[in-house]
Each structure stands twice: as C-alpha cells, then as structure tokens.
Image 1 (cartoon, rainbow, N blue to C red):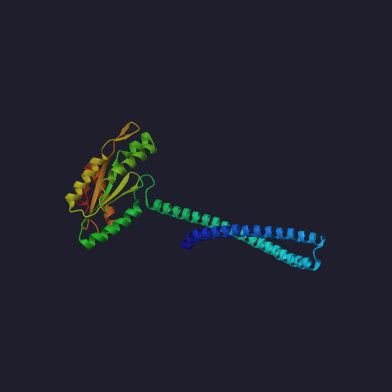
Image 2 (cartoon, rainbow, N blue to C red):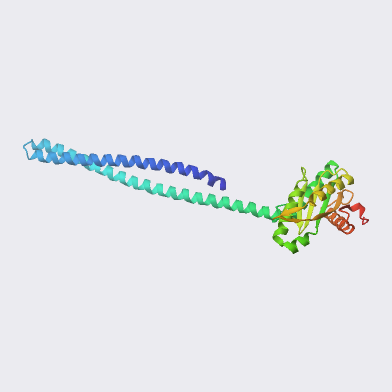
Length: 289
C-alpha cells in the first residue's frame, strides 16, 4: 500500500503538468477563436453598411447570412472552449490537492516508521549508555550458544560490577554518574570483537559476551584487560573520578548450557570476586559448583 502511494506522487505530478500545458494551449486557442468572432462581427458590420451604399442587396444579404452563421459557430466554439478550460482548471485543482494529500500521507508514513524504529531501538537499548539492554543481550547470548554448540566453541559470560560508583552518584549527583557510566561503556566497547556483545544490565552492572573463548585462562586474561581499562581515571569537568570493576566469569559448556544458568553463575562469581577483592573470578574458582 505504501509502495503504491509513493509511486502515485510522481505520476500525479506529471499528469498535473500535462493538464497545465493543455489548459495553456486551450486558453490560447480560445483567445484566437474569440478574436476571429470579433473580426467576423466587424466584417458583418461592414457588410451591413455596404447594403446601404447600393451594393446588390441579394448578394450582400447572402454573404451577410453566411458570415453571421460562421460568427455564431465561432462564438459557440469559444464558449465550448471556455467550458473545457473550466473543466481543465477544476481537474488541475483536484490533482494539486491530491498531490498535497499524497505528500502529507507519505510524510506521515515516514514519520510513523521513524517513531517505530526509535521505539524498537529504545526497547532493546539502554537509555543512558546506548548499549544493548538485558533483553537484547540475552537474545544474542542464545544465538551465541547455538553457534558454540554447532561449532564446538567455548564462550564466556562476564558479569561486571563497578566498585565505588555509588560514591560518585551520592557525592556528585546522577548527571555526573551517568557520564561516568557512558565513559565506562565506551571503554568496554573497545573490547568487542566480531560477534561479542557488551550490555548495561542495570545500575552500575554490565554484561559481556565473549565468543570463542579458548579456555579459562583466555577468559581470565581478557577480563584482566577490561579491569585495567575501566580502572583508569575518569576526568569529568576537571574532576577526577575513580571506579573499579569486579568481574565474574561463567564458561559454556562447563558452567551452564542456557542463558539463565550462565548469567546466574557469572553473577555468583562476580559477588565472590568482590568479596575476595580478586578483581575477576571464574565460577569454577568459587567453590559453588
């Protein structure tokens, strides 16, 4: 339906252009016909004068009669052309109104589609950082698990929590806190490779999906790099803010086969890392297995 509407706009514009040209030509013909009628009227007037000057009356009357018949027909043509021109002018107005309505409909449709895209984006992304939210992360994790199962890969789910972030919010306010979160999000995005995904779960918690993790050592080394990068000073309006990351790591297939299992066990490992001040901790190191 929208496709037909889009096509109708240019076609209608072309037809309107043709109608305008036809109206211009018709008006020109009408002017010429009216001029002819005026000329014939002048001729008839001359003929009538000649009757009074002694020209054989029968011949003059015959010529006058023929001329008057032609004058009537020409005048009728002029009136018919005027009617046609009125119809053309009405058609042009209708076409212009149609183009205007089509243009408004197209603009409304485009605006509606833009709102739909924005709404969909907001439903799947975090409003502060622009990162995928938990729903989108979970969906991508399911896709990652399907690939890992098919290709025999390992993958790692990392649960990241920011230490000392509450102090930033309490001391400097939520606006500064949001800017710190945005800076941390950018630092996490640096580590995204190929099908990896970083997400803001809520508050000061983030998630990282690491595809094709080779083994526990590989995942632990990757997490250590994230901790070093996130722990760098955050300069905001000339004020230095420091936050650190605690990371819990769960591996597929050792620590779980479903998104729910892996997220839960990464969460458990993160809290153990925070309590033990270890920076990062594998689920297998928590003793909870």
